[in-house]
Structure formats: C-alpha cells, structure tokens
Amino acid sequence: MSTFSHIRGLGFHVPERLYTNTDLEKIVDTNDEWITTRTGIKQRHVVEDETCLDLTYEASLKALKDAGMEADELTHIIIATFTGDMPVPSTACMLMERLGIKNKAAMDIAAACSGFVYGIEVARALINLDPTAKILLCGAEVLTSRVNWEDRSTCVLFGDGAGATILTAGDGIETGKIVDTLIRADGGPSSNLTVKGGGSAHPYKINQKVGEEYFVQMQGREIYRFAVRSMTAICNEILEKHNLTADDVNVLLPHQANLRIIEAVGKKLGVDRERVFVNVDKYGNTSAASIPIALADARESGFINEGDLVLLTTFGGGLTWGAALVQF
Ligand code: ACO
View 1 (cartoon, rainbow, N blue to C red):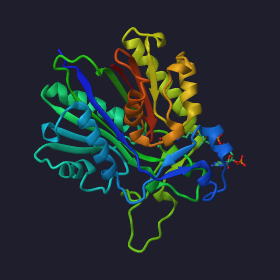
View 2: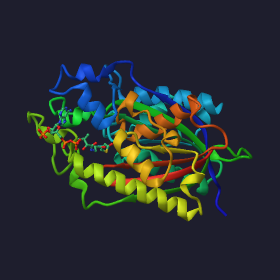
View 3: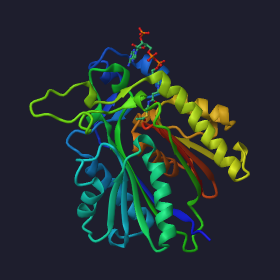
View 4: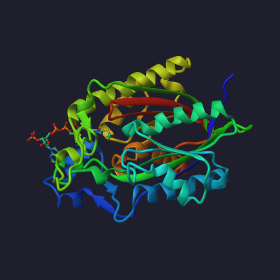
C-alpha cells in the first residue's frame, strides 16, 4: 500500500529587474511584434546581483510559511536546476546552510526544464520509503547566465526565477494530493537542445575564450514539434491510466515555454482555453522553475481552487518530458 504525497506549501520569487520586449530591441535585432506572435512572451525577470541560491531561498521561505512549517522540520532539500550557483557544492547544500539547518539530505537534480516534475517523482518515492519525510522541492533557474545575448533566436525566450513546494504524506489532509507522475526521456534527439561548455566533453581550458557552446543552443522548430507531441501523448497516457478524460481536468498547467505550444497542447487534449493556465507572458521560459512558479501563481491568483484536478505537463533538454496529476 503506497503513501500518497501532498503539496503542503507553495511559494515563488523572481528578481526585480524586468526586461520587456522593447528593452530587448536595444540588445538584438528583434521587435515586440515578432516575440509576441511567436512566443506570447511580453517580459521576463533577469537577475542583477542575485544567484540561483538567492532566488531559491526567497521562494523557500514563502513555501515554508504557506505550509506553516519551520525549516528545521525538513528532512530533504531537492532543487531541480541546471544553472545552480556552482557545480560543487550543490545549490541544495548551500540552501540548507542559508536556511540555518543541517544534518538533512540535500541534492540538485538535472533534467533541464522537466526537472521539477522529475523531482515530484523522486519526492514521492522518498515519502513512500519514509512517510515522516518532509521535503522542500524547488525548481530554480538563472537561465540568463547561460544565454547568448547576441543570439536573438534564443535570448528573447528565457527568464530567471524560483518556485518552491513542501511535500509530505497526507496526515489526514487531502488537499494537494499527488495522484500520479509519469516521467520519460529520449537521448536520441538530444542535440536539438544543448548547453555543452564546461562538461567533460567540452572542458574549460585556462585562458580559453567563452564560445557559443557555453550557451543554450536550440533547434527551435524541432523542439516545438517535440514539445507538442510529447506533452500531448503523456497527458493522454496519465489520464487513460486513471480512467479520466480531458473533461475531468479543471486546470491544465503546462511548462511555460511558448504560448503557441501551450495552446496547441490544450487544443489537442480537448481542454478549453479558459482551463489552461498561462503566465509565460510575464516570466518567459524559466525552465525547471516554470511549473512551481506557475503552480504558486495559479493558486495565489485563484486560478486553482480547492477541489480542482490539475494536470501538469513538461518537456525539456535531454530530451525529457513528463506529467503529473494533482488533486487540490
Ligand atoms: N526576432 C526577430 N526575428 C527572429 C527572432 C527574433 N527574436 N528569432 C528568429 N528570428 C527570425 C529568424 O532569423 C528567421 O528569419 P528568416 O526567415 O529570415 O531566416 C525567422 O525569424 C523565423 O525563424 P524560425 O526559427 O523559423 O521561427 P519559428 O516560427 O520556428 O519560431 C521559436 C522560433 C519561437 C523559437 C519556435 O521555434 C519555438 O518556440 N520553439 C520551441 C522553443 C522552446 O520552447 N524552447 C524551450 C526549450 S526547453 C527549455 O525550456 C529549456
């Protein structure tokens, strides 16, 4: 008999500095009309001095407060990110120190934009191993540190931010129940979305100039097709597994990468546009932070209400993808 995991607290934080589409017109040869019609993005938040740890810390404090918990009650800290403060130590270990606690488990996980949904599956497994576990699961990204600000085809897409959740066993509370998760990957088409520089296949060399391989490189068209196909298929799979249809879903909350992708997935699934949550216009694509930011934003703004069945879905580098069903 498995123990269900529940979302007990939510919070998010983005840096103050805003880059609107008009601001980007001063950096690269682009314009608001192109960015808006192709992506739906109007602005993104971009760090000045803050790091991934700073953003995650602020989001975590909000999630802890929302859950009515003290940091010391946590047993695990997990951060989904590929733009942590540094490769070693993990940002999760640094967050533990910043929260003023020790002797807990801490790790970062890397599944690119799908990292948070992968993290939910990991947290569920940990709570099944030990139903007393109390897990701080964050998605956090300073993606603009890996963006080539001379490449207009990528730099307009991304933003920085962090989202945090607290996951525990139910303890008699039914809301926020993780009904199920499905996570998948296919390394075959991985070259369509890469950040190569600094990996052991592309090691840093002293005095080497930073080249294009250091930044996000993407075949936009291929990723677009993959995103629509993979998210639609995995949503249908998780619904069928639970004898549900699109009509049972109160809120579809997809990875906020591109409005056209989000709308195409909603349409293919048969979820009305009014039930699809969108905030990509305000934050751009924040990769692993996008789903927890969207969850906290949707709950705060009253888009998600108690009793709603929420279908999360994601895709990203790897290539990776996934879905989760949450009963609020
Ligand atoms: N401003 C103005 N023109 C631009 C810009 C820009 N910012 N970027 C590209 N263009 C130009 C191109 O140079 C090209 O011009 P050309 O026809 O003269 O050669 C033209 O616009 C069309 O370019 P395409 O790349 O074909 O445009 P497309 O319609 O495919 O849209 C986009 C590009 C928005 C990137 C789309 O392919 C897409 O959304 N793909 C998915 C991206 C995504 O979701 N990535 C997330 C990855 S996973 C993660 O979250 C990390």
